[in-house]
Image (cartoon, rainbow over all chains, first blue to last red; front, top):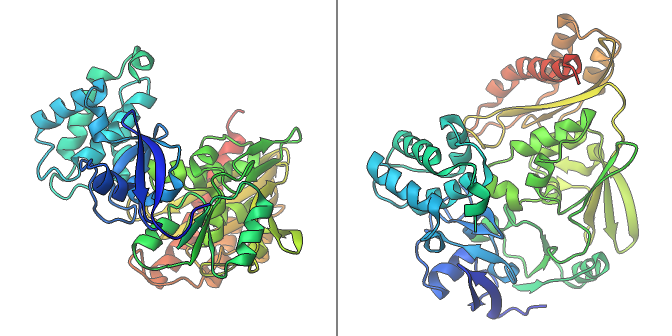
Length: 169
Length: 284
């Protein structure tokens, strides 16, 4: 049991075991940005609507702003910084740059994390409808989504394939 | 704010008794948003994450299902439950977005009792039984009695929802959940959950529950009766829709005016009945 003050939370972030101090109302996003200095995950609405804080928690897409830090003990977290060597994320980055799918860039990390999760889960490259459905929880206020969807479809065609299992970490 | 991590339901009950205004934390997908927005400031949170067994979905040999309160919406969405219970999976698939469903729980969504949410009408249409445990022991409530008012359930102070039991779906039963929403993943402007038992094209029994049409999921004996022992002809379906439309007392908000919501009820009811019926006609 945890008291009312600041308490240490043991978790794994981007492959590294960390012990981070969390106040009782702190979220995983607060921990990542303020304690772990991982500022790739952004804070937007802070209420689970916009998707700019999207990270992987125990291998699944999650809202870092909706995970209470004190309830994250033992969890495995991957942020956009942890996808540096991910083949899906690399191809996504290239295609998004090429398509002009990055304007202000604030939503980009969350979108790359969410799409990487989609690419890992699927055996066939997702079509535009599947991408749009999957990104329903990621808001972009610059692009109008057309370029993001185009980039995601192209990236999927390049990186989603029969060897998907082998490439997922 | 203190945070506790009990490992048994008994410990949860003890903590709820010891801490006035304490809240149970399941997936946190609504609760943490409310904390962040300053809408809630409970003195204590009781995490259910380490409570053994609450996240199990058990399929019984007779086709019935028991699911613990912390089964995730994603797990329910992927469960592919048989017959009428398909209404639950279809509703779970339409809750918000993948990230929310991955951690949001069935029990959390039911206890939040938002009448615009997807799961409450689906569980009413499926005639679920809710198991509540409190200081005075265990009791079982129908889903229809569980939802009392906006954001209010029949759970007493100190009680928690531990599991939901679904009766075995009768042979020939089908279920469907249809939502009209302004954008993908939004709360319902209006939603319709329907379960029916069909025998050679004749509807033997039906249960319809609407979301976003009242302070709790809206179900009417008369509307269900209007479909019973019919061939689901257009007149019977229209009659059920008209009865529900008349009983609807929706809010006006950014997802639609009250009048707009009432106007789309009969059409959405007819489409949901059609979707359920199509499953009975499709080869198994």
